[in-house]
Length: 216
Length: 216
DNA sequence: AATAAATGAATGTGTGTTCATTCAGATATT
DNA sequence: AATATCTGAATGAACACACATTCATTTATT
Image (cartoon, rainbow over all chains, first blue to last red; front, side, top):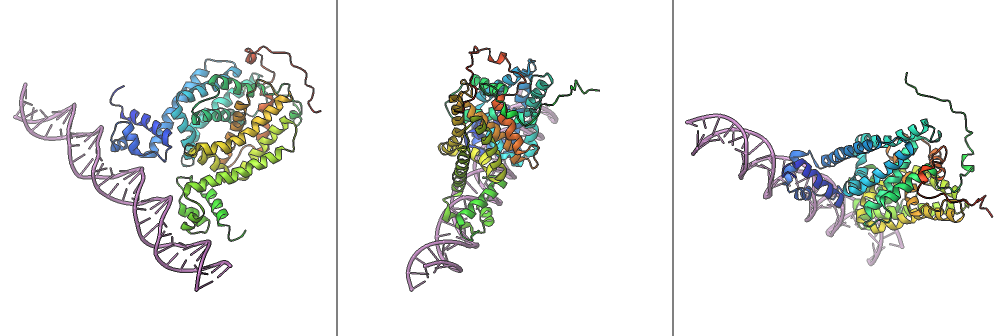
């Protein structure tokens, strides 16, 4: 790696330091030291401490979204897509523990100050999931009464909580593959030995109009 | 409410203020003002700022665990238990937005500094879920290959993410009941229109003993 | 009168940010 | 080719200030 690219070095250092201490307990001086750079230099590349955090999210989250989308584009079957999404998500977390911790913990905490911002990138990520669901419904694979807006949050939340566990605890009990398999299996097939009739008592199954496509 | 009970007033004020600004951006002076108490008075009841946060978690989380356990004890069927758990969880969040935000956001961020502690209370909450799962497996209702340790996190995560959405966004698109129904339904029955054979390719389907119902 | 509880102004520390200064390398001048 | 001039990236010591905590004093309770 080049000696230069101060920007990149500062970002990488900040990821490490923020993950170690949390944003508010991290000192600019510590980041500077980690990046082998003078305190003041940081202000040549970033407006302030907060700006570093935002940049981390912007740049790194962007990479992740792109990579996940890329990976999913190779697959057709929505069932498989969900499983691959889970696997990808958990693998990425495992590979980038520090980054994952920041996105999970620090950015959530800061969300009050950058709601609108976080939401955009984050919504984009969640939308990958709801798109898969809609696709599955169109293909007649997934039940029509599944609300994609709820599903995407539930599915993401499940993965997110699973990874938090990894991020915070040093040794992990379950492997990435096992977890991804289990979780996608929960959501696809449920956990019942045999489908439970009572849970569907409310809605009568109404005949679904076939909305082939709606492009004019 | 009594004019006294400074302890309680400070806690309530702190919940409000922490939720509004986040822990690190909250001033002791602001909490004092909100509680109609002098700055110094707070230090008669708490050791320091952090102690207030911990106390909030300890006292309030304790109440929640007790209340959920209480509610679940009335029910037999594990399927129903899961649904009630979801409903309870989401309802509690809705009723105590500020508290929910603190538990979700601030405590997660602080977990680095008090891992051992958070884990105990939190684990207790998660364990409620895995206990339901094990019970369901014993009764032959839930598949044996479901790992309770993964399930509890996935299920909790799903609910947690759903409530984060409510906590952070002012108007909500889905009602508590709808969300609870949908989420527990995902986990019980999956989302497939028809069980997907591929996803089970690993394990040979072993003949399922017909567990008609398990009520004695 | 004695004790306890509450007050809030004062303190001191920790830290994000600034900015005068340095100096390696580029450019101009001889 | 040698020397002088310029440039702006990098530095890090110094600053300013926000804020948790303290404690001498006041007020309430017994």
